[in-house]
Length: 322
Image (cartoon, helix red, strand yellow):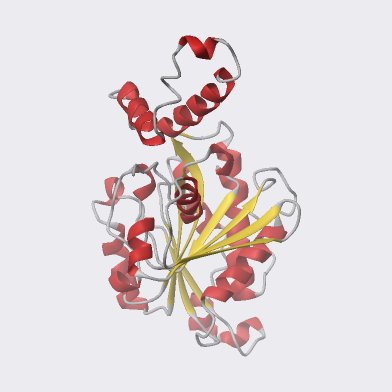
């Protein structure tokens, strides 16, 4: 079985269904909130399920909204509210007051990879205020202590993100780490329109084949929730989708008979490998992002940061960072 590169458990599950692969130890649930908003949950319950899916055991919740990438004066607050509900669901059972470290993964200088840093820019940070003046500075008896860090990337710091974050966790001892990162999708229709939230942590750079040490409960010693939006898609995937549409169109015409049905006889894996060979060496490692990615990242980062603010601070009003 071949793997089209994707960070989304939902896309992996869909691919397994398309290939008629039996998924034992994996549960799937879909809930339609309204016409444009759908929440899907993939729960990998067993090691066999994890091996089949190629992802760690845990819960993967995906928010899909066709209008998420569109301009909205409230930065799609309805999506932020749903994100807050999902975060609360994943931390259910933990103590009422939490110390939370939000990690903005990615490279601020590369627009499709700047989602994590931009989310941190818009967060309501409270740890220093609680530490200096006490929680009553907020007029409340219960205040979550929110801190954040943008560790950069190895090319900038010479250090693994895990090394930096591990040191901060050891020093500040948070109850929970939330890691925010840009992801890669298999389908172009999900770019900037999908949020994945999972309790399994994250591997920085995995979406573009740049594997770094994972941030998870095993490596950090505290629970890790990861939040991500796909901002890039593999070039080979775009060509693969185009080939699929081309074959579908040709099959309806006489021109297809001249090809002797040779393209149609190829399996999905054979088509994808053929494309990768044709693209190599110049385009094989290319990832593609929408042309308005700068505005998209700005809007989406505020949608995510508001979701985190609502989850832990009740949604304090904030102006987006410029």
